[in-house]
Length: 129
Image (cartoon, rainbow, N blue to C red; front, side, top):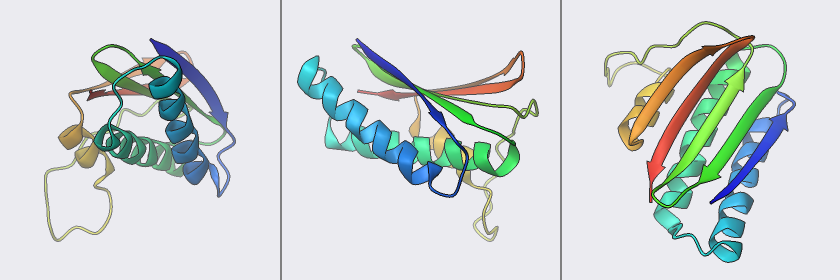
């Protein structure tokens, strides 16, 4: 198992930084721990990280915490932010512009959990290896 946590400042470059940190982490997990992280899993993880961090940056003031863990069966992605509002995936609507992030995450993740924290919420997605 490999795990890491990152505090993202919430500025303009934090989404790209989150994707970069996720890619570096997964490369290290693959190399150092010999975990089976495929290119497909790498792409899905970066997509989920991008969507979750984008939502946190858009709706919550302050820093965002991203936690990553690779276990024997999945990549676990956790994003914590200061907004206590629990988001809901909207019904599919091909004509809607934007607000598809949670739909996308639900479509590619094995599991998606959202829970209140002492100061905000945590969204956790699991990507199967």
